[in-house]
Amino acid sequence: MKTLIIIPSRLSASRLPGKPLLKINGLSIISHVFKKAEQADIGQVYVAAEDQEIVDDVKNNGGKAILTSNKHKTGTDRILEALKKLGKSDIQLVMNLQGDEPLIDIEDIKNLKKRMIENKSEIGTLAFDIKNEVLFDNKNIVKVITDEKLERSKFSKAINFMRESSINLKNTYHHIGIYCYQTDILKKFCSLKQSQNELENKLEQLRALDNGITINVALARAVSHGVDTEEDFVAIKKIMEYKS
Image (tube, one colour):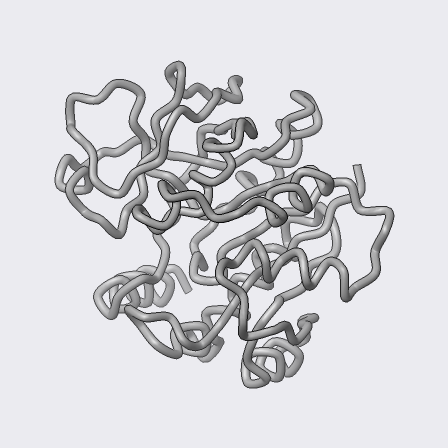
């Protein structure tokens, strides 16, 4: 199935303004993510940004980027605008890869596409086992509850997403910021009004569940930490500089 990866990005993140252009090993976070997506080799990759500085940075580092509106309420709306602007009518799957996850595993990106095709899923995403109980209380770590235990061979159904969770809740996992949509489901999702549940929890995936759209979850091979705070940036910078 013809697939497009689109990475939404903006400079005005509330917790860490300017984070897409913060540098690790001399390369911006957004360009690190772009290069990871390209290495997965599942389709063309574009960054969809509301800031010209991000577009310029990605292009200067050999990537492809498109300027989008700064009026979008969510990253998914930005994804759809980019898809329309690119005019690619033959795309069947659109992958939304978060621009602040430079540690995303290439094999996990490939596996998500594979599961989407095998299961004919509407929306797919990834999650990982929570190894540290402190993370259950961390609002920056989004949790997903699935209908059955996650295993590498399964594509379990998401029941709920939340920011805080009880340690004792069954089948609760660390959600990883990547989504794969059937193109028609992406269009349907963006046409729906933001749900109360979504607005209260600041989690747009709840809009899908609130409207009867199924989200399937694959078990990720490796945990991918997003850069939400200055502390996250310092920690991820250390990991990536050590690896290099």
